[in-house]
Image (cartoon, rainbow, N blue to C red; front, side, top):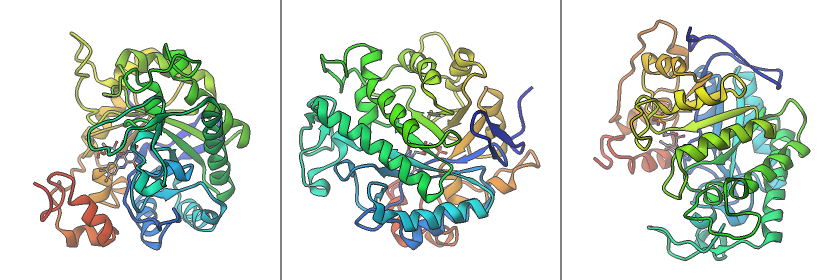
Length: 366
Ligand SMILES: Cc1cc2nc3c(=O)[nH]c(=O)nc-3n(C[C@H](O)[C@H](O)[C@H](O)COP(=O)(O)O)c2cc1C
């Protein structure tokens, strides 16, 4: 029988308990200071979601090294100067009853010189639409250094009081660039078959584990399918490998968790179910994408997810999670007025960013 979205979840191996099955998925919001430090606005936006009842609150993607910064206003966890404000956020989230995760990442080929002062780096030389400059492939010693940066970042997050980190292996950023056959054309131990392409992620996880304590929650987010050359078949296999790498939770970034996979011929199964059938209960799953109301959330849990993530519904409704329970919560959908979004705890900068998301803000892109 499917679990209820309102039921608590004890995350195996961590001693941590989420008060319900909801996760505020990572959302870039452009509100951080130029040196990656959290701003008042960013802390406010996230604390409002902790107050709004989410089980887990995840920060925006946060670069682990200055060379990995992909956009203005991006949160960073690469320096000790960032710790005081991280502490403020972590303790605030805890006091409001939620668990906290920092999403750690590096932009790779999508970290432009204009922000980093250097040529973008990736698994191989790559250029994609919308990127100004071709990346160069990282050297062996640079890869090892970056693995260290992920570990240091996780250690910093634990010192600041966070419950854990989510390693961002999704959406075409550096970890995903290593996983993808199109962006990783290396012929050394960091490329080739899935074992080689996933070595970067495995080494990151080893380093994170070595630098943090046993109960620290380590989650990995992946795109089950991605145009950088990530296939559903490989991702399912990767999830079985990840299980043995000391990971506590797997986060599937589905974009649409309500319908079947497009690429698997003849099978209309949802991505969540596809993974659940392979990994069973051995690795808890968070699944995210297009969940708007309580029925959607219950559906995703019914497909085998242990927790369900939301992003856009959580922007529009800060108290989304605490409204669940009646069975028929179905909040208003976009477009939202700028006034409504400001009331929901977004700053003008974040509202402006949301104007770029099709159909989200009444006076934004339609
Ligand atoms: C404004 C915005 C910013 C996002 N930033 C991130 C991010 O930093 N890291 C990430 O993994 N996903 C990011 N995403 C993707 C979301 O976490 C989520 O997977 C996606 O929006 C689908 O969920 P939804 O249908 O509930 O919005 C972002 C989404 C939005 C709307």
